[in-house]
Length: 220
Length: 311
Image (tube, rainbow over the protein chains, first blue to last red):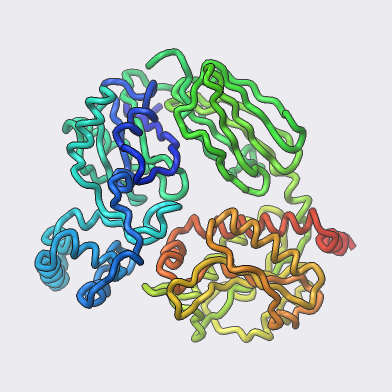
């Protein structure tokens, strides 16, 4: 028997593009599924795509600084390519990036991780480098979404259900960028750990977290 | 619960083990149990599920599966509270439908894959991951090496073919040097029915990308095998197609139908990134498997291989 009263229901969507309005999409795909008390969770990369925040690397001209700095983050990280580092510089400015690098260097000396993002800006941790997002956006660098708080509020007003924007990975890390209320953030953090958005071509960037009083049976 | 309609929210498919046998599971998720019936509308080609009092909240485009049995799944909402789901298959197989209650509820179509071992039974397949040891092959712009990623490709292929009674022989399973000539001798000594070399493309042009398949010009049927493998790989991994061409380096294989597969260019930023995703190797393996399956079933050369294995 499942003891948690939260049940993630992933919804398969079309390939979402910059032509789409994320609030309209959330309303259309969750109609008849989400009710007041439930939580509509959106994958942050898809919100960003609707905001024209998907950038082709060939449209970015990395400078010398970006080419130099991209050698230092972990090879499997998000800023390992010159175009992604250039976009990071564009997002927060050269000074914050350099301060972040100084903090990261200090952190290495004292064995403390994560100082680069803490100083340069947590929004940089949301950048997905090439091949970090599912087809057909694998060729793009995806920046973090803008004004996530406003979006979740608009979705709550449009649907009556709470909303969150989340960044989830496959090591059970759930980062809530915005939540229409603190409780919905807590519910999402608990319910999205198994990444129902998927890491491949599941195409389920919208998940309705059903909050049920009764526990439905699940066959083995 | 909102309204009385079943809302279909998601549809996915997976190869899994059911009661000790490999099956394809097609799963339809909904927020209420589906009032659903299933029938084989075209024997060996299509099974149709009709759900009444239902609507599709999910996108209704066809979903590519290509798992060696299930080809595509189409879903259509007729607008009158009825949803039709068509599962296109490539072989007549036993199947059953069952419901799994829960949130979301699941309607599951279980299709037997028991016919596949019979197709591949006793086939001897040599997998040859290229390079190794001090010969790293291509290098990705970040840090991946061709000699390592081809070992992952071989492991994924082995995972797909082993349950089908295929005799797999790998020229190498670890990081060691192996002369090209020894690789072909290995295939000849093992009396291989098929040889599959695994490589990635690499180029100074970082924009070079995509899939190519090379074939042994000395073996009749190799060109067809290359074409079928390429077609199926393109469907699975959705990369640009750089074509098929003969490779005289493979000629020492003699009459063994052989191909060298280069699914991606490791020197390309994007494609090196794809090689970091473990599921990408599963797709490569299924693409090669589908190509070989079609070759054995559809071509006279493939039938010859099957006859040889029986003798």
